Length: 367
Ligand SMILES: [Zn+2]
Ligand SMILES: [Zn+2]
Image 1 (tube, rainbow, N blue to C red):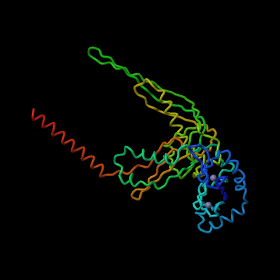
Image 2: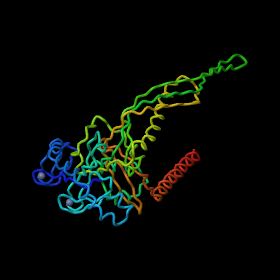
Image 3: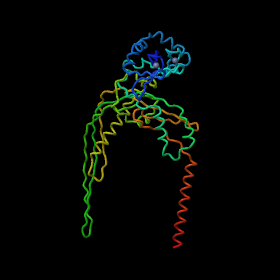
Image 4: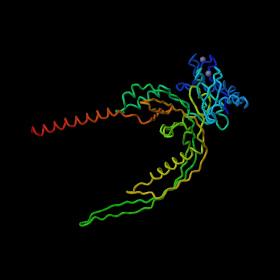
Protein backbone atom coordinates (compact mmCIF):
# COMPACT_ATOMS: atom_id res chain seq x y z
CA UNK A 1 0.00 0.00 0.00
CA UNK A 2 1.65 3.26 -1.13
CA UNK A 3 1.76 5.93 1.52
CA UNK A 4 4.76 8.04 0.61
CA UNK A 5 4.72 11.07 -1.58
CA UNK A 6 7.36 12.92 -3.48
CA UNK A 7 6.91 16.67 -3.84
CA UNK A 8 8.26 17.96 -7.11
CA UNK A 9 9.95 21.20 -6.09
CA UNK A 10 12.42 23.42 -7.85
CA UNK A 11 16.03 22.44 -6.98
CA UNK A 12 16.94 26.15 -6.99
CA UNK A 13 14.20 27.76 -4.89
CA UNK A 14 11.85 24.98 -3.73
CA UNK A 15 8.94 26.49 -5.68
CA UNK A 16 6.43 24.06 -7.17
CA UNK A 17 7.46 22.54 -10.49
CA UNK A 18 5.12 21.81 -13.34
CA UNK A 19 5.53 20.16 -16.72
CA UNK A 20 5.07 22.87 -19.32
CA UNK A 21 3.48 21.62 -22.57
CA UNK A 22 4.81 24.56 -24.60
CA UNK A 23 8.51 23.99 -23.88
CA UNK A 24 8.21 20.28 -22.95
CA UNK A 25 10.27 21.10 -19.87
CA UNK A 26 9.66 21.38 -16.16
CA UNK A 27 9.19 24.95 -15.15
CA UNK A 28 9.36 26.76 -11.82
CA UNK A 29 6.98 29.69 -11.81
CA UNK A 30 8.65 31.18 -8.71
CA UNK A 31 12.18 31.71 -10.06
CA UNK A 32 11.67 30.96 -13.74
CA UNK A 33 14.14 28.04 -13.89
CA UNK A 34 13.51 25.31 -16.42
CA UNK A 35 14.73 21.73 -16.35
CA UNK A 36 14.55 18.84 -18.77
CA UNK A 37 12.52 15.78 -17.87
CA UNK A 38 15.76 13.76 -17.65
CA UNK A 39 17.36 16.22 -15.23
CA UNK A 40 14.39 16.17 -12.89
CA UNK A 41 14.08 12.41 -13.10
CA UNK A 42 17.67 12.14 -11.92
CA UNK A 43 17.15 14.59 -9.04
CA UNK A 44 14.06 12.80 -7.79
CA UNK A 45 15.11 9.22 -8.45
CA UNK A 46 16.46 8.68 -4.95
CA UNK A 47 13.57 10.35 -3.21
CA UNK A 48 11.19 8.13 -5.15
CA UNK A 49 13.15 5.01 -4.23
CA UNK A 50 13.02 6.02 -0.57
CA UNK A 51 9.31 6.61 -0.74
CA UNK A 52 8.73 3.17 -2.20
CA UNK A 53 10.79 1.34 0.41
CA UNK A 54 9.21 2.77 3.56
CA UNK A 55 8.45 -0.18 5.84
CA UNK A 56 5.03 -1.72 5.98
CA UNK A 57 4.57 -1.14 9.69
CA UNK A 58 4.72 2.60 9.37
CA UNK A 59 2.23 2.52 6.56
CA UNK A 60 -0.22 0.54 8.62
CA UNK A 61 0.08 2.98 11.47
CA UNK A 62 -0.68 5.90 9.20
CA UNK A 63 -3.73 4.19 7.86
CA UNK A 64 -5.06 3.08 11.23
CA UNK A 65 -6.80 6.38 11.73
CA UNK A 66 -8.59 6.00 8.45
CA UNK A 67 -9.77 2.50 9.23
CA UNK A 68 -11.61 3.75 12.26
CA UNK A 69 -14.15 5.65 10.19
CA UNK A 70 -15.77 3.21 7.92
CA UNK A 71 -14.18 0.11 6.61
CA UNK A 72 -15.77 0.28 3.16
CA UNK A 73 -14.70 3.87 2.67
CA UNK A 74 -11.25 3.36 4.12
CA UNK A 75 -10.54 0.59 1.63
CA UNK A 76 -10.78 3.10 -1.19
CA UNK A 77 -8.87 5.84 0.58
CA UNK A 78 -5.25 6.45 1.44
CA UNK A 79 -3.66 8.81 3.90
CA UNK A 80 -0.46 10.59 2.95
CA UNK A 81 1.74 13.14 4.63
CA UNK A 82 2.84 16.03 2.47
CA UNK A 83 6.67 16.13 2.69
CA UNK A 84 6.65 19.92 2.30
CA UNK A 85 4.07 21.12 4.80
CA UNK A 86 3.32 17.99 6.81
CA UNK A 87 -0.42 18.17 6.15
CA UNK A 88 -2.25 14.88 5.99
CA UNK A 89 -3.84 14.30 2.63
CA UNK A 90 -6.65 11.83 2.18
CA UNK A 91 -7.07 10.67 -1.35
CA UNK A 92 -8.50 8.00 -3.57
CA UNK A 93 -6.59 4.70 -3.50
CA UNK A 94 -5.80 5.07 -7.21
CA UNK A 95 -4.31 8.55 -7.06
CA UNK A 96 -0.87 8.61 -8.64
CA UNK A 97 -0.29 12.33 -9.07
CA UNK A 98 -2.04 15.27 -7.46
CA UNK A 99 -1.39 18.54 -5.68
CA UNK A 100 -1.27 19.24 -1.97
CA UNK A 101 -4.36 21.39 -1.27
CA UNK A 102 -2.57 23.11 1.63
CA UNK A 103 0.78 24.15 0.18
CA UNK A 104 0.05 23.72 -3.51
CA UNK A 105 3.06 21.51 -4.18
CA UNK A 106 2.70 18.95 -6.95
CA UNK A 107 2.89 15.48 -5.46
CA UNK A 108 3.51 12.12 -7.02
CA UNK A 109 2.97 8.73 -5.36
CA UNK A 110 5.99 6.76 -6.62
CA UNK A 111 4.66 3.39 -5.45
CA UNK A 112 1.78 3.71 -7.91
CA UNK A 113 4.38 3.20 -10.65
CA UNK A 114 6.22 0.24 -9.17
CA UNK A 115 6.71 -3.05 -11.00
CA UNK A 116 3.75 -3.98 -13.16
CA UNK A 117 2.14 -0.62 -12.40
CA UNK A 118 4.83 1.24 -14.31
CA UNK A 119 3.40 2.65 -17.52
CA UNK A 120 5.30 1.77 -20.70
CA UNK A 121 4.54 5.04 -22.41
CA UNK A 122 3.21 8.54 -21.96
CA UNK A 123 2.07 11.18 -24.40
CA UNK A 124 3.06 14.42 -22.63
CA UNK A 125 0.57 17.30 -22.62
CA UNK A 126 0.87 19.43 -25.77
CA UNK A 127 -1.94 21.89 -25.03
CA UNK A 128 -2.36 24.23 -22.09
CA UNK A 129 -5.37 25.18 -20.00
CA UNK A 130 -6.06 28.28 -22.13
CA UNK A 131 -6.32 26.08 -25.22
CA UNK A 132 -9.02 24.07 -23.48
CA UNK A 133 -11.01 27.21 -22.61
CA UNK A 134 -10.73 28.44 -26.21
CA UNK A 135 -11.81 25.10 -27.59
CA UNK A 136 -14.84 25.08 -25.29
CA UNK A 137 -15.91 28.44 -26.75
CA UNK A 138 -15.61 26.96 -30.24
CA UNK A 139 -17.67 24.03 -29.06
CA UNK A 140 -20.50 26.42 -28.11
CA UNK A 141 -20.37 28.22 -31.47
CA UNK A 142 -23.02 27.34 -34.00
CA UNK A 143 -25.43 26.18 -31.29
CA UNK A 144 -28.17 28.82 -31.72
CA UNK A 145 -30.48 27.51 -29.03
CA UNK A 146 -27.91 27.51 -26.25
CA UNK A 147 -29.29 29.56 -23.33
CA UNK A 148 -27.48 32.88 -22.98
CA UNK A 149 -27.06 32.31 -19.27
CA UNK A 150 -25.16 29.13 -20.02
CA UNK A 151 -22.44 30.77 -22.09
CA UNK A 152 -22.44 34.15 -20.35
CA UNK A 153 -22.30 33.16 -16.72
CA UNK A 154 -20.10 30.38 -17.87
CA UNK A 155 -17.41 30.62 -15.28
CA UNK A 156 -16.23 27.09 -15.88
CA UNK A 157 -16.31 25.45 -12.47
CA UNK A 158 -13.27 23.33 -12.91
CA UNK A 159 -10.50 22.70 -15.42
CA UNK A 160 -8.03 19.95 -14.77
CA UNK A 161 -5.32 18.27 -16.74
CA UNK A 162 -5.46 14.53 -16.21
CA UNK A 163 -3.16 11.78 -17.39
CA UNK A 164 -5.67 9.03 -18.04
CA UNK A 165 -4.45 5.42 -17.85
CA UNK A 166 -5.01 3.59 -21.14
CA UNK A 167 -4.42 0.04 -22.30
CA UNK A 168 -3.04 -0.26 -25.82
CA UNK A 169 -3.74 -3.61 -27.45
CA UNK A 170 -1.71 -5.40 -30.12
CA UNK A 171 -2.90 -8.53 -31.90
CA UNK A 172 -4.14 -10.22 -35.02
CA UNK A 173 -7.65 -10.83 -36.20
CA UNK A 174 -8.71 -13.46 -38.74
CA UNK A 175 -12.06 -12.74 -40.25
CA UNK A 176 -14.37 -14.59 -42.59
CA UNK A 177 -17.40 -13.17 -44.29
CA UNK A 178 -20.13 -14.87 -46.30
CA UNK A 179 -23.04 -13.29 -48.07
CA UNK A 180 -25.08 -13.16 -51.24
CA UNK A 181 -25.13 -10.52 -53.92
CA UNK A 182 -26.98 -9.82 -57.13
CA UNK A 183 -26.58 -7.89 -60.32
CA UNK A 184 -29.38 -7.31 -62.77
CA UNK A 185 -29.68 -5.84 -66.20
CA UNK A 186 -32.64 -5.42 -68.52
CA UNK A 187 -33.29 -4.69 -72.14
CA UNK A 188 -36.42 -3.85 -74.07
CA UNK A 189 -37.78 -5.63 -77.11
CA UNK A 190 -40.84 -4.53 -79.08
CA UNK A 191 -43.32 -5.98 -76.65
CA UNK A 192 -41.44 -6.89 -73.47
CA UNK A 193 -38.76 -5.92 -70.98
CA UNK A 194 -36.32 -8.72 -70.25
CA UNK A 195 -34.54 -8.55 -66.89
CA UNK A 196 -31.69 -10.87 -66.07
CA UNK A 197 -30.73 -11.20 -62.42
CA UNK A 198 -27.54 -13.01 -61.55
CA UNK A 199 -26.92 -14.35 -58.03
CA UNK A 200 -23.46 -14.56 -56.49
CA UNK A 201 -22.19 -16.15 -53.36
CA UNK A 202 -19.63 -13.89 -51.73
CA UNK A 203 -16.78 -15.19 -49.59
CA UNK A 204 -14.05 -13.07 -48.09
CA UNK A 205 -11.17 -14.01 -45.81
CA UNK A 206 -8.81 -11.55 -44.27
CA UNK A 207 -6.14 -11.18 -41.64
CA UNK A 208 -5.54 -7.84 -40.03
CA UNK A 209 -2.75 -7.01 -37.65
CA UNK A 210 -3.62 -4.29 -35.20
CA UNK A 211 -1.31 -2.20 -33.04
CA UNK A 212 -1.94 -0.13 -29.94
CA UNK A 213 -5.74 0.02 -30.07
CA UNK A 214 -6.58 2.19 -27.04
CA UNK A 215 -9.14 1.74 -24.28
CA UNK A 216 -9.12 3.79 -21.09
CA UNK A 217 -8.40 1.90 -17.89
CA UNK A 218 -10.15 4.33 -15.57
CA UNK A 219 -13.62 3.60 -14.24
CA UNK A 220 -14.10 7.33 -13.49
CA UNK A 221 -13.77 8.38 -17.13
CA UNK A 222 -16.87 7.97 -19.30
CA UNK A 223 -15.88 5.41 -21.97
CA UNK A 224 -17.80 7.15 -24.74
CA UNK A 225 -15.98 10.43 -24.01
CA UNK A 226 -12.59 8.74 -24.08
CA UNK A 227 -13.43 6.95 -27.34
CA UNK A 228 -14.67 10.20 -28.90
CA UNK A 229 -11.52 12.26 -28.31
CA UNK A 230 -9.44 9.73 -30.23
CA UNK A 231 -7.27 9.44 -32.15
CA UNK A 232 -4.11 10.18 -30.24
CA UNK A 233 -1.07 10.65 -32.44
CA UNK A 234 1.48 8.03 -31.41
CA UNK A 235 4.37 10.03 -32.86
CA UNK A 236 4.54 11.73 -29.44
CA UNK A 237 4.44 8.47 -27.49
CA UNK A 238 7.59 8.36 -25.35
CA UNK A 239 8.87 6.00 -22.63
CA UNK A 240 7.23 6.83 -19.32
CA UNK A 241 9.00 9.08 -16.82
CA UNK A 242 7.45 10.38 -13.62
CA UNK A 243 8.72 13.90 -14.34
CA UNK A 244 5.99 14.38 -16.96
CA UNK A 245 3.39 14.34 -14.18
CA UNK A 246 4.01 17.37 -11.90
CA UNK A 247 1.21 19.89 -12.31
CA UNK A 248 -1.33 17.31 -13.47
CA UNK A 249 -3.58 14.73 -11.94
CA UNK A 250 -3.09 11.05 -12.59
CA UNK A 251 -4.75 7.89 -11.41
CA UNK A 252 -3.43 4.39 -11.83
CA UNK A 253 -5.71 2.04 -13.76
CA UNK A 254 -8.65 0.41 -11.99
CA UNK A 255 -10.12 -1.39 -15.00
CA UNK A 256 -8.20 -4.56 -15.84
CA UNK A 257 -6.72 -5.57 -19.20
CA UNK A 258 -9.31 -8.36 -19.41
CA UNK A 259 -12.29 -6.11 -18.67
CA UNK A 260 -11.27 -3.60 -21.34
CA UNK A 261 -10.39 -6.34 -23.83
CA UNK A 262 -14.07 -7.16 -24.44
CA UNK A 263 -14.78 -3.61 -25.53
CA UNK A 264 -11.65 -3.48 -27.69
CA UNK A 265 -12.32 -6.86 -29.31
CA UNK A 266 -15.81 -5.82 -30.32
CA UNK A 267 -14.39 -2.69 -31.89
CA UNK A 268 -11.71 -4.62 -33.77
CA UNK A 269 -14.26 -7.16 -35.03
CA UNK A 270 -16.56 -4.45 -36.35
CA UNK A 271 -13.71 -2.61 -38.06
CA UNK A 272 -12.37 -5.77 -39.71
CA UNK A 273 -15.80 -6.84 -40.99
CA UNK A 274 -16.36 -3.38 -42.49
CA UNK A 275 -12.94 -3.58 -44.17
CA UNK A 276 -13.92 -6.91 -45.76
CA UNK A 277 -17.33 -5.58 -46.75
CA UNK A 278 -15.69 -2.63 -48.49
CA UNK A 279 -14.11 -5.09 -50.94
CA UNK A 280 -17.53 -6.33 -52.06
CA UNK A 281 -18.11 -4.00 -54.98
CA UNK A 282 -19.78 -4.12 -58.34
CA UNK A 283 -23.08 -5.64 -57.20
CA UNK A 284 -26.50 -4.08 -56.93
CA UNK A 285 -27.53 -5.82 -53.74
CA UNK A 286 -25.55 -7.45 -50.98
CA UNK A 287 -26.79 -9.31 -47.92
CA UNK A 288 -24.40 -10.67 -45.32
CA UNK A 289 -25.24 -14.20 -44.12
CA UNK A 290 -22.49 -14.97 -41.70
CA UNK A 291 -19.36 -13.42 -40.23
CA UNK A 292 -16.65 -15.07 -38.19
CA UNK A 293 -13.75 -13.45 -36.38
CA UNK A 294 -10.96 -14.92 -34.31
CA UNK A 295 -8.70 -12.62 -32.35
CA UNK A 296 -5.20 -13.67 -31.33
CA UNK A 297 -4.14 -11.27 -28.61
CA UNK A 298 -0.64 -9.83 -28.58
CA UNK A 299 1.16 -7.49 -26.22
CA UNK A 300 -0.81 -5.00 -24.14
CA UNK A 301 0.95 -1.73 -23.34
CA UNK A 302 0.14 0.59 -20.46
CA UNK A 303 0.17 4.30 -21.28
CA UNK A 304 -0.78 7.65 -19.75
CA UNK A 305 -2.56 9.90 -22.24
CA UNK A 306 -3.29 13.61 -21.69
CA UNK A 307 -6.87 14.85 -21.27
CA UNK A 308 -8.23 18.23 -20.19
CA UNK A 309 -11.48 17.92 -18.26
CA UNK A 310 -13.80 20.91 -17.94
CA UNK A 311 -16.98 21.04 -15.98
CA UNK A 312 -19.67 23.63 -15.59
CA UNK A 313 -23.05 23.88 -13.93
CA UNK A 314 -26.34 25.15 -15.27
CA UNK A 315 -29.62 25.05 -13.38
CA UNK A 316 -28.28 22.54 -10.92
CA UNK A 317 -27.05 20.14 -13.57
CA UNK A 318 -23.41 19.24 -14.21
CA UNK A 319 -21.99 19.45 -17.70
CA UNK A 320 -18.72 17.70 -18.48
CA UNK A 321 -16.39 18.31 -21.41
CA UNK A 322 -13.21 16.45 -22.30
CA UNK A 323 -10.47 17.63 -24.64
CA UNK A 324 -7.64 15.58 -26.06
CA UNK A 325 -4.58 17.20 -24.43
CA UNK A 326 -2.51 16.47 -27.52
CA UNK A 327 -4.78 17.23 -30.50
CA UNK A 328 -7.48 19.52 -29.03
CA UNK A 329 -10.41 17.34 -30.12
CA UNK A 330 -13.32 18.04 -27.80
CA UNK A 331 -16.45 16.20 -26.73
CA UNK A 332 -19.13 17.25 -24.26
CA UNK A 333 -22.46 16.46 -22.69
CA UNK A 334 -25.58 17.39 -24.64
CA UNK A 335 -25.97 21.12 -24.19
CA UNK A 336 -29.16 22.61 -22.76
CA UNK A 337 -31.67 24.13 -25.20
CA UNK A 338 -33.37 27.48 -24.64
CA UNK A 339 -37.03 26.77 -25.53
CA UNK A 340 -37.91 30.47 -25.71
CA UNK A 341 -35.18 31.05 -28.28
CA UNK A 342 -36.46 28.10 -30.25
CA UNK A 343 -40.07 29.32 -30.24
CA UNK A 344 -38.99 32.85 -31.21
CA UNK A 345 -37.00 31.48 -34.12
CA UNK A 346 -40.03 29.43 -35.21
CA UNK A 347 -42.32 32.48 -34.99
CA UNK A 348 -39.87 34.58 -36.95
CA UNK A 349 -39.73 32.04 -39.75
CA UNK A 350 -43.55 31.82 -39.75
CA UNK A 351 -43.93 35.62 -39.92
CA UNK A 352 -41.50 35.86 -42.82
CA UNK A 353 -43.36 33.03 -44.52
CA UNK A 354 -46.72 34.78 -44.20
CA UNK A 355 -45.23 38.08 -45.36
CA UNK A 356 -43.81 36.43 -48.46
CA UNK A 357 -47.16 34.80 -49.16
CA UNK A 358 -48.84 38.23 -49.05
CA UNK A 359 -46.30 39.68 -51.46
CA UNK A 360 -46.84 36.83 -53.88
CA UNK A 361 -50.64 37.02 -53.62
CA UNK A 362 -50.52 40.79 -54.09
CA UNK A 363 -48.43 40.41 -57.23
CA UNK A 364 -50.69 37.67 -58.63
CA UNK A 365 -53.86 39.72 -57.98
CA UNK A 366 -52.27 42.92 -59.22
CA UNK A 367 -51.30 41.28 -62.50
ZN1 LIG B 1 12.60 27.89 -8.67
ZN1 LIG C 1 1.65 20.39 1.46
